[in-house]
Length: 210
Image 1 (cartoon, rainbow, N blue to C red):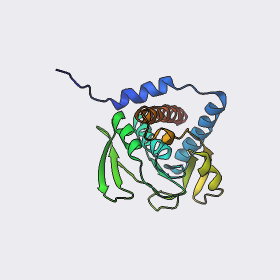
Image 2: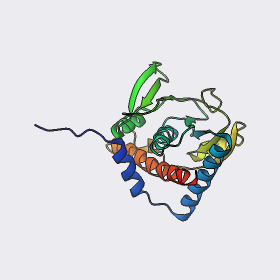
Image 3: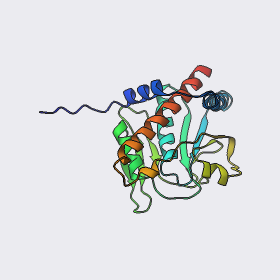
């Protein structure tokens, strides 16, 4: 009889951080973002983060979910993560599968064939977050926020974000190229872990600054 091991999101998160290797430029970027987050928390008592990618379906969603986990992991209070795009599509199923593999739980809050809305959490989470594809100006995205673009197209096509108190560009390779191939599952999972590792390093720095 085969015994299936339960996915431990904490282990995946911590291992992803340990495996993260940053070059000087990337480390400097994460430090700048961490400084802004910590400064905002000290001054305002709260901080809103908005991860932005063109279709708000893959990289920005991964970033929002892992930022949500990282803030709870490091005990950072009054931090809120959101995501959005320059076009409204849907939370891509492959992104959801990869996050579920890592231990996150998805439940439908509002079914829509084009763009379902999900409640996302994990075992013993303090709160849940809402996940769906949306435009930058969607009212669910609390303002003002620190804008973090995760793809080059979004960075180039959002020349001005009025709601942003600061803006950073933290790009990731789009896993979309693997869609429909035998590498699909592994590519999305590795993208999830890569983002988990860097987001973990980011909020570790924030914790040290508080």
